[in-house]
Length: 348
Ligand SMILES: C[S@@+](CC[C@H](N)C(=O)[O-])C[C@H]1O[C@@H](n2cnc3c(N)ncnc32)[C@H](O)[C@@H]1O
Image 1 (tube, rainbow, N blue to C red):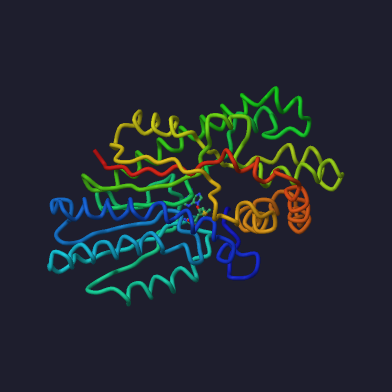
Image 2: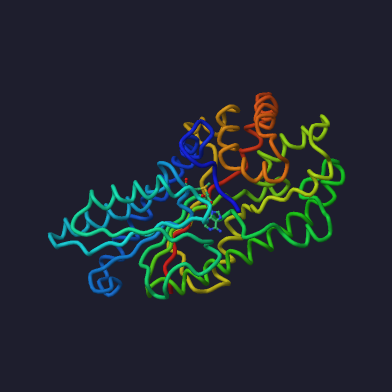
């Protein structure tokens, strides 16, 4: 029951995802390199056919960016060799409640604009489950999704330990417990994800993904604070009930690069070709350091989960967040320790 804000209106993900779009740029060179590797070794191509997929494509202008990069790289590679390119099948995945309407139309445009043959399809479902036939995919990519967990940590919910206690001292006391619970859930989910993708990829198949992470120094914060801080202010103002707030858990975790590397190595299906750590805020990324644009982005991503739990509070959340993050340095402090982790893997 999760999706980014649908449609193309003012509060939609389609209109408020320029930050995520900028981050897709980081993946493009790795996708191009992976395609050249795959195409240079013809054993990897099953009889002149390549199947590629984007996992967590969402909706709006970002949905086809990665697969289009891959298709262009395939055609460019074979053009340089003066050979006819293989047939390409492009598959897009997201959760079933994702707004696939616009995505379908863009897929048809992609199919028409590439020769000789591009076939397209949608594969709805969770990437924490099997999505494709075994040994059928050559390249899978995913941008800005894998920090979403399959569920919030049950140990916190069962023991009624708030993820973000309104009481600052209690929050500090439980910081490690909360952090560890989320880290465990991420380890289990990411291990499962790698295991599933290894089954679906051909031998030598490639996986190129990015996700939100954090520096070791930011162990005292969580990647979901951008939405939780405005909500907590609304609790202190008496607008939101404290118990209701304490039972709100977001299924998200940002690992450090060491954690990620260790999980990939322990799972064992993939070799790491490249691993990069990028700061979340760059000189040009005004979507993240401008309070108004930041809260629009937060709304596009979290509105549906917030409304499901708290009801119709989102206008107030945005006002509160804009006001809070306008104060000197607060938004910078919130985002400064965030990273984006980028990994390119080959199935061993
Ligand atoms: C922030 S959006 C990123 C979308 C797009 N890749 C981009 O770069 O703009 C994260 C997407 O991941 C999807 N997602 C989260 N958990 C998922 C899961 N278990 N399976 C498939 N998609 C998932 C969400 O529905 C959402 O569309």
